[in-house]
Image (tube, rainbow, N blue to C red; front, side, top):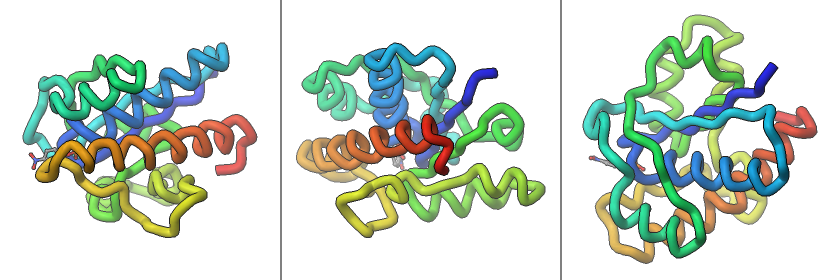
Length: 157
Ligand code: 4NP
């Protein structure tokens, strides 16, 4: 049985595609084949779109090619995924509005719960900012995804 991880942000064109790309790259590098990773957005703003150019560039500068297309989070994702990782508190609240029971609610976590370098709760939304914001987000996602992966493998989450 595969372990299934879903990263969720608002637009599914900046933060969650980057988290997905980082996790896929880490899984490949470690030769792991029993974890599947996807991403989604709580909004319908960018359905079908590639990630934002600025996120694509930041990813590429770090050797990661992002290949996702934006899609909207749906109630069915609670059945498909074991871990649903929200980028900020507002994403988490929107996801939880669709949960039907405690089993579903328990799957939802904040990405920065896995950031061992900060007590901040949110991966900040870089969409309306400049390039620096994308690098800042990349660094948060890099260390949080590493810790999340270790945590999943050790069954600690
Ligand atoms: P994301 O960033 O949630 O990290 O994909 C955003 C992308 C688009 C918008 C907001 C945030 N938007 O308002 O269109």
